Length: 479
Ligand SMILES: Cc1cc2nc3c(=O)[nH]c(=O)nc-3n(C[C@H](O)[C@H](O)[C@H](O)COP(=O)(O)O)c2cc1C
Ligand SMILES: [Mn+2]
Image (cartoon, rainbow, N blue to C red; front, side, top):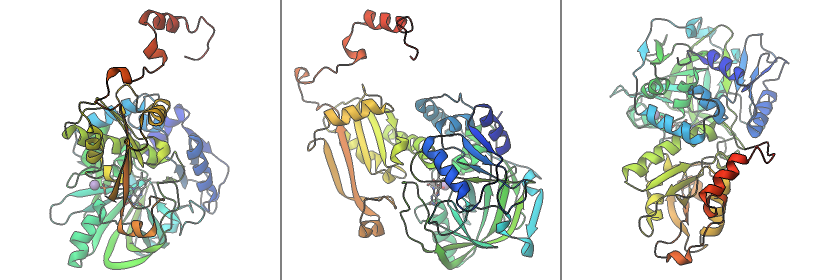
């Protein structure tokens, strides 16, 4: 049975030691953020703050919801010990079997309804998350719902929102992201207001899918259903023509007015830096807020690894890239995005059928979103496990020729916020990509390829079997 709401998910995580309930009062001003940051950097349990300074008991914060692969495995109802490859394979399989959402008449998110003068975004303990942030961020782990006015396509996406005042917020609406496409191409181009709804504190898969790259015209709600194995239940909004997950903790409804801009940011970002300056950005005007009794506000805290973005993008981007490589009929045998690299490196293992196939792998990775956000590609032979950092580093250090193995693409479209680019490159989203070919050259004679000197490679099967069988007998306590 899929999780009905965030509360069931938290309870399940608690059973596996993946939640730390914190009863001591903490300050929404940096303290809750600092604790969550440290949890990310230590891959500690998710902090569940019970009492926030200046706020009544019951107004809680749940930090770093999916900042470990164990919590993602639990969210997907897999064994918490599931490996990266197991999670990836299951995500890949389920997302291809979408299930449409079910609209229900009522839901817990309607337990409290505030409209008009009764709306106050400061009702919730929106944290000042990082030192140096431009303001208090209410939405950092959530979905924003918008609709294409022509086709009826409903997009869910996770795009940060900073509180400006009691009834308005600001955020990024990049033209390259679906919300930006809908906003710029449709509503703003026609000088129309764009209705939106935000759902915060959803069951875990809804927010996970909000941060996943699914195609244009695809409803994330259907993918979320597929991943859950059950439809997501939606209820009608109070003031806009949109539906939201019925069990969300907090729902915010309103409109983005064409041409309106206010300074938003800066904010600590997914690459692990406060990378972009404060800039004039679109404004979300709020008309209505609904929430459950004792609402739980979810918070991610992006920065140095490992945070929610490293985990979520580590699976969803890898799955999308894998699909592209398969569509191109390339001989990929494995894929990995090391969470330490903040979505800026992908490792692909291949069976090398002909010389320079690595160039095709890299070209395919960069051919479309989200692979085009990944500036560095490492290509290894299929005897290297891409998830094994020891083997990957070894292959890179010993097989990648500094000149022949390194190919720089000097004029590449890049993701925003990658720290090593110059201000001009970032302004144009134009920089440089690179791939490292860590495979043996195809034309080398067998005699020139050295034998890898590893337990697996250089001992007879019977010796290996005997050693493995007797490992504990020798006195070793770890496998
Ligand atoms: C915690 C977290 C926060 C994010 N914040 C933003 C953001 O503020 N703006 C943005 O454009 N993308 C952000 N993303 C990435 C998008 O959610 C992601 O690209 C997603 O695919 C967007 O949905 P779309 O494909 O429907 O546009 C964030 C991702 C995560 C995991
Ligand atoms: Mn989308």
